[in-house]
Image (cartoon, rainbow, N blue to C red; front, side, top):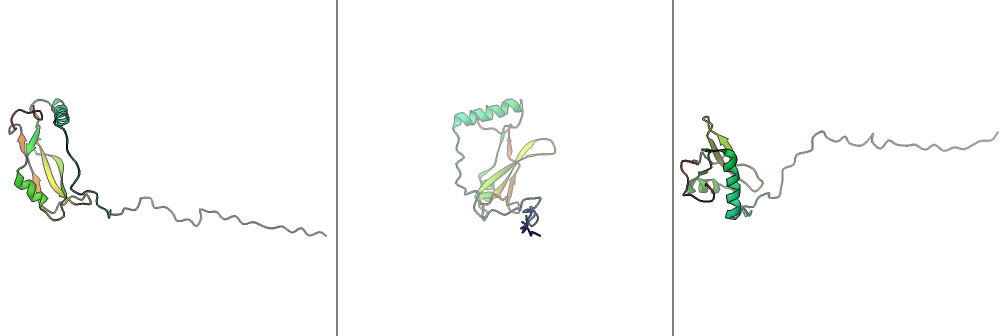
Length: 136
């Protein structure tokens, strides 16, 4: 009788002991700043004029072109602790008149909604500046 020596190799399924991936990615709060308050938002008057003209053409005659916020309101938003800038939100009155809402934003991009909010800019029209490339 001949004895044949055989070796058995065990194959392990690599996926059995692997951790199951969560169905939703883990949400982590950013630790580095998103905003500094020093972002460059400059625009040449020619480009600004083109952009506002595009809006006016699509909005139609009599549409709100813009609005005015007084310095005190803007400074009150900016003076809040931790504010590096302002975010605006488009909003609409019950009478369908569009308005803007301004809120302070911290370095992580969070709206500081528990602070001072500026709202309801003075509309243009009827309270527009003199004829200029941005409103005409």
